Each structure stands twice: as C-alpha cells, then as structure tokens.
Length: 317
Image (cartoon, rainbow, N blue to C red; front, side, top):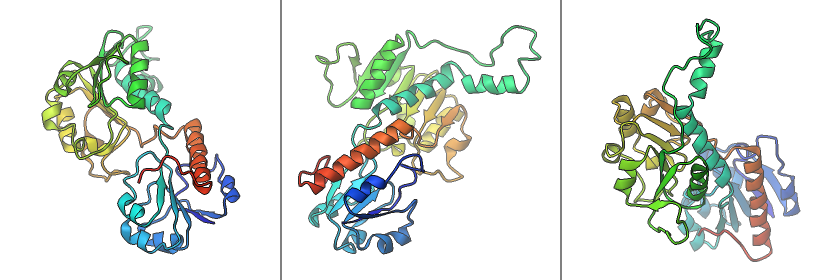
C-alpha cells in the first residue's frame, strides 16, 4: 500500500516516530502541504493521513486508488465525508485521546485569572519585588476557586473531566447539555443555558461545532453573564463570535477570557481578540503534550490496523 501523510509535523515535530507505517506499506510523510500540492502528492495514495489539510470532493475525485483516510484529530470537518462515503472511502478519526490534556489546560487558563502567575512572575523579573517595602505584593485581586461556580457547556468526556477537577477544588458545577443525566451525575446541577450563564463565575465550552453551536457565545449571551465572569473556550473557535467577545472584554461586560482556539488558525493580524483586554490566548496547544500526541499516534495506528484487517473502527462517514 502507498501511504501518504500530508501534514505530519504538528503531530510529530521529531520527538515521536512514523516508522510504524512501514508495517503497512511504502510511506511518505510531509511536514505540511499547501492546497496546491494536495493532488500531486496524494494522487496515487491508497491510504491518506491528514490533520488540517482540507480534502474536498474535487480532491477525492482525483485520487482513484484511495481506500482509507486516517485523521490525526477528533474533528472531521476537514474532509468531505459524504463524498468519501459515496466513493467507498473509509474515514476514521481519533476520539477521546485528549480528554485529560484539554481539561488540564482549562484550569491553567482559569488560574491565570485567580492566581495571576504570569503577571506576578513578570513583575518580579522587572524588579518590583526587590524594590518592594513589604515581604509580598499583588498587582491584581487574587481569588480561591473553592465555593465558585463553573458552568460547563457540553458534557462529553472532556466536560465530565472538567467537572471532576472542579469538584476537587470545591467548586459548584452547573451543566448545560442536550442530554442531561442527573441519575448518573448527581453531584452536578443540570440547568438551562440562560441559568448557567447568569449563575457561573466561569463558563467553559466543551460542545462540538454544529450549526446550533456556531456563534453560541455572542453579544446576547455574553450580556447574560456576570460582569465578573470569565469565559474559557478550548473546544472550537467558531463557537465564539470574536467581535462580540472583544467588545464584551473591552467594555467590561465580562471580566476576562481564556482561549485555546480561534475562528481562523493561525489568526489574522486583525483578529479583534489579539488586542482585547484581559484575554489570554494559547495557540491551540491543549492537545500538544508529548503523552497526548503519543496516544494520538497509537490510536492512528490502531485505526489503520483495524482497516487493513477488515474491521475498521472509529469510522465517521
């Protein structure tokens, strides 16, 4: 089999291995592939591995040997799944590999607002502690998580892990989900979206990107939040209306935001959130821990092996 990986770099910048692919055929791994290079590189592929390289119906029509697409991600909107299905091409994704890592980043972002680690570390290195007349100082209000309320929008594996961590901190947990399960999760409060927005000190998004969730966080919903509230988004960028969020931050409608995803990645220089007040942005790194990426590659191989053996798994089309 001829195996082509069109964008292997972000998954494996050199600290992991692609050598396992040789068990399944001849392979080539490209660090990155531009839209103009897709056909030339993949036209003879029987197995295609992609992360963020878009594959359209027009691309698929020019890959007559293609039988299988292995995604290096949970999301699968990067490929025309309907066209792949019509052409008999199996598409498999990587589910639930980053649950612990994403939940961990949620609290790293939250801590930027409660403990202000970056702000105070920067102040120390600027000499503000050496010149301080007291044994300590703080440049902004600090807060405990104990007793605060976190509102979780979406309650899949990541939302559930966030709830477990929040409970360990002594937080109250409110959840908005289309499928509440109060009999199973009796230690959280399931509620409607407006109640969650009004009552939460932190609102964290963990829902999939669908027509219903696109722009879910907008001018109207932001105005329903507390002025002291913090928004966290580690799910999908288009869930948040970026202009509305920038306006809310700059006009003190809410107190801050911590984001690992944006509508366009990498962002354009004129992205309004890059200059918004009290906004921490990380470059889509929740999934990037070594252990997390190693787990992704392990599932990627499991998916390919299952396909080769005739019982494909994690099929999304």
